[in-house]
Image 1 (cartoon, rainbow, N blue to C red):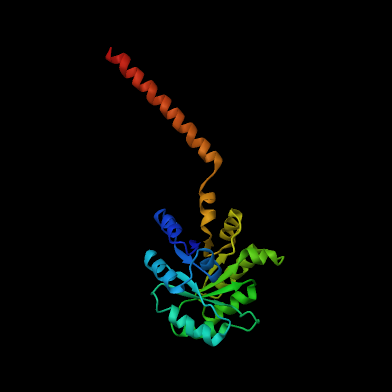
Image 2 (tube, helix red, strand yellow):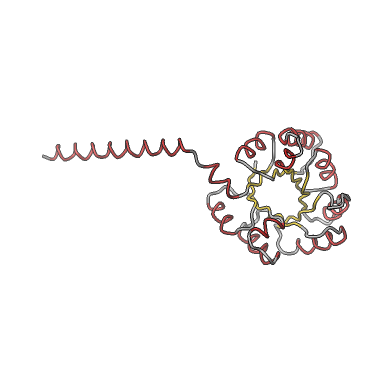
Length: 231
């Protein structure tokens, strides 16, 4: 399983790259806005360079399918590791499968995003999406169990030999990460504020404190014994 970091903040990306846990990056217009990015290209290209060959998902910013194609083709020229995010439908509920399929046929990696159901996921995979982004938190908001949806999509992909990978996003708590991992997600994209919480545990800190205190006592006893022996 891979971990992507769900941010356009380069400092956060660098910090977690250095700790060896980042396999890719996802962004969207809301994340870019929150992180203070006002120029999409200026915000994206340095991230692509920072992460090397790791994939960086960048979303189109239009409701028009023809414009989605034009934007996607431009985005794909910015760096070899750009993955273009295309919503499964536009805001009017019109299918974006044709856009996904056309881009896939042109060799452009597509992250089919804003997916909230099994049916949406399998159609995106059939259309040629490299990734299908299931929004776990929003699936739960609609009264469904995200773990069941994730598991069903994974089983279907495996049964029929699809190479499409599941990205689980809309993470709202550390337990969401655990649930998605156990349900079979290929990738979980995690907002950076959750990573320190995942690595930390108050009883781990207490255990380390106890070990350090005991080590200090042991070292002190050893030094005292050396002094006595020298006398």
